[in-house]
Length: 486
Ligand SMILES: Cc1cc2nc3c(=O)[nH]c(=O)nc-3n(C[C@H](O)[C@H](O)[C@H](O)COP(=O)(O)O)c2cc1C
Image 1 (cartoon, rainbow, N blue to C red):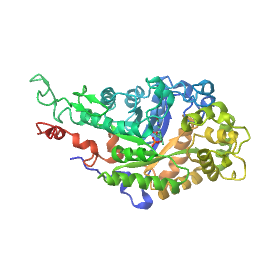
Image 2 (image 1 turned 90 degrees about the vertical axis):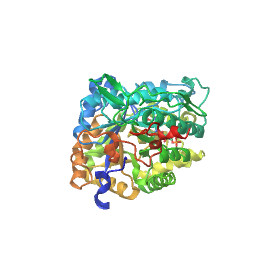
Image 3 (image 1 turned 135 degrees about the horizontal axis):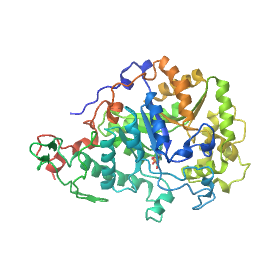
Image 4 (image 1 turned 180 degrees about the vertical axis):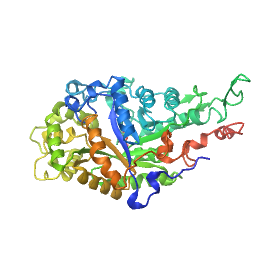
């Protein structure tokens, strides 16, 4: 039986609830802050060297970060000045080029003890049989410290490069993903009985002969006979991250996600998303507290408010306008090159742009009376993408972060960076001691070498109320339950 052991993050009284913290990164020169790769405090031009990643992993592990979350896309951002134009991304290294994230994990796991690695992979373009094998392999090598960030992908460029003329419609991508999950649960949970692997040198039996079965999956989108090609890894199903904001996205996350990533410009707005996700989980028969919700946020922290402000201006002076607008085009599908340079997007006749930019303007102090032109959008995005930003000395940022935490009801934060490792070094130096002093962040790990699911939910295996649990093949069962009725 897998039941939740309350983790530190959920046991303390309301005022002392501790935050989960992730570092948000990508295997590319500029993740969210276009052009900042060339800043003196950024080393991301070394993204293709293992030492860049092992150094970063050690930095985060030593500071008690819970996880590193590695984003990924399967095609370039080519909407701005497009169609199909990657030139604006090139100087900035703006999510181009992008290397595969999963290969980084075994190396980083080998130099750390506790950090969890969340890796993005697409249920739209990767085949479930191959994905299940890749994650099982890495879960073995990382001794259970890997999570899969399930995405359905959103770029036309990815669709075109995977043999499609255009993207599969949004909600159908999620319908496919639901069946995809059944396939991988069967492979991970229901293809090898829990006591299948004997590795008994005396009898010469590696795996018991009656303990491996084909999964014989035949559905609308997939036909996978199995069996799984890997023996069960420490977590079987890797811990499941998910991020979605639409109804279909939240429906998927509320059913399958174990940690869910959300965005939002104010804690009040985020609270609505958090409540909705927990409601979906409840409707799916899950205990809503069995989902950890994390909100994305950008932090620029210095020794004082003034130092942070100097940094902010310095970062903006290193930003790359074309790269930022290319990222914006990829995220929103809107090509800002078709708009005039002096257009105030708070007044735009595109309702989507107007509402996006108005929400930004409302949260950036002192800008309500300035026009939000392309240049201003570039400034905003250069400080770590579309998410909300907290800028200041330790007290100011910790105050704000606590307010976000308490008002929104999230379990933690996904921390974007402007410069890498610079942003994380500053958070570790200035912010974490302040949060620890306030009892809001852990000063050590709860358990050495814990698996991803243990860190977030206190259990090694999928919890009993998770939909993947119905595919488990338990000790003593001749057949897994999902095959008994078939
Ligand atoms: C913190 C965060 C990280 C994300 N990382 C990725 C990613 O690495 N790759 C990707 O294709 N989409 C990523 N997304 C996008 C989501 O998977 C999702 O497509 C998007 O939030 C839109 O929601 P929807 O699919 O419900 O429309 C991320 C979203 C958030 C909030």
